[in-house]
Amino acid sequence: MASPHSIYATSLLLLLSFQLLWTISEAVVHASDTFTYVNEGDFGDYFVEYDANYRALPPFSNPFQLCFYNTTPNAFTLALRMGTVRSKSLMRWVWEANRGNPVRENATLTFGTDGNLVLADSGGRIAWQTNTANKGVVGFQMLPTGNMVLHDGKGNFIWQSFDYPTDTLLVGQSLRAGGASMLVSRASDENNINGQYSLVMEPRHLAMYYKGANSPIPMLYWTSIEWFTIMKGSLTNLTLNSVTDPDEGFIYYMSFDYFTTNPSSSSNRYMAYSRYNNTLSYLRLGIDGNLRFYTYTPNVQDVAWELVYTFLDRGSLEGECQLPERCGKFGLCENSQCVACPTPNGLSGWSKDCEAKKVPCKASDFGYYKLEGVDHFMITYTTGDDGRKQSECESKCTKDCKCMGYFYHTDDSRCWIAYDLKTLTRVENSAHLAYIKTPKK
Ligand SMILES: *[C@@H]1O[C@H](CO)[C@@H](O)[C@H](O)[C@H]1NC(C)=O
Ligand SMILES: *[C@@H]1O[C@H](CO)[C@@H](O)[C@H](O)[C@H]1NC(C)=O
Ligand SMILES: *[C@@H]1O[C@H](CO)[C@@H](O)[C@H](O)[C@H]1NC(C)=O
Image 1: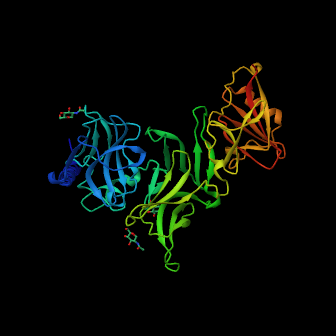
Image 2: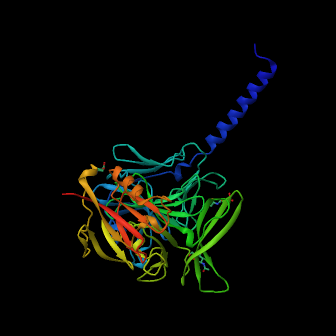
Image 3: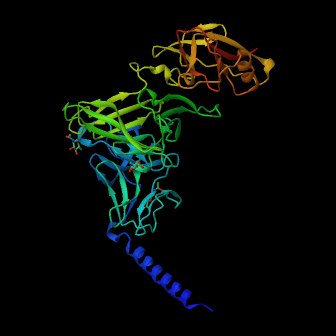
């Protein structure tokens, strides 16, 4: 038998759940605020990034517009476009819902009374959704910052596109530990799937990685150490911001504002600047693995975009040689130029066809050829294996079928195994050696 206490508790619970139900049922999207957009009709007339075809949808906040676009027939991405028709400059894709999972003609984007935003393919398959059904969402909004949000009755964001970056970070957008902590490059102009590069917010810095098809692990080719590094604690979030320096008047900075935990602190670092108001800017991890800031100035007629800063640039500390694919599949790079194609018979002129030979797995079927005064891109920011004899380094590579060569510094006995060769850099120090595998016949 139920005690008076538990009866009281049950009725309280019932009352509470009625109240909860009532609150939730109140928090629905007004029918007039719901929408369904169908991917159909004529394509837009203007030039957009990746030479895509597009269909603009109603959600718009200058200069951002929601669109469907495709670079191959009948494979559409729901994306946010930045740039206006008025400025005549190429409009760019700064956010995407369904990379790698395209939809077809007649796909639908639906914002229902339950507060869920759903991209469904023409057959009904759900390609993407915000998973916000019955979570108190009452409205959809496109903000002037390029943030698309679903908000509750109090204006809190239940979902925001800023939490799901792909390869681009807009001003105001963040990377977060335990959330979206990285950007991933696009494979190519035509192919909208994840590429091989990533920019990752790690506890102490930002880092860029290249993950080749042959490589079991991503290889580090850049960190933010020249810009900032966290000595104590670890990064919790990092936001791209635009700052005007009142003393300098016409200088507008792009800054990374970041927070750490253990201990808690906040700091910021100016990364680049422009002469124009740069509130409308973005950071992009490019198809080529380079990282760049772009600023959009809507009032300029012809060249609304300005490339404000390139991280691995001819003028930067590392230069373009630090880009894994600067010299394609294989090549020797010097002062940002591809200067030679290494072969077992010495260096020959570099071309796009330069490629290391496929090597059989069996140790008796391959040998090594040596290059002097050469480093691999992963060497700049990694320490390698310390205190190794060269013979140990070689044997590690020999035993590993996937190893394409090894790098050895005779001056401090450090060893690196390379699963991808790509761009090698010429260095002054002749104690930096490369041994590249080559088939015996
Ligand atoms: C899209 O739907 C419309 C209307 O139902 C239909 O006429 C058209 O053929 C469909 N388009 C494609 C490519 O399936
Ligand atoms: C970043 O973290 C700090 C400290 O936890 C927090 O106060 C702030 O709101 C966070 N900012 C963003 C954009 O997430
Ligand atoms: C820069 O542009 C933004 C958006 O167009 C505007 O809100 C802001 O007031 C401008 N800032 C300055 C310093 O003019």
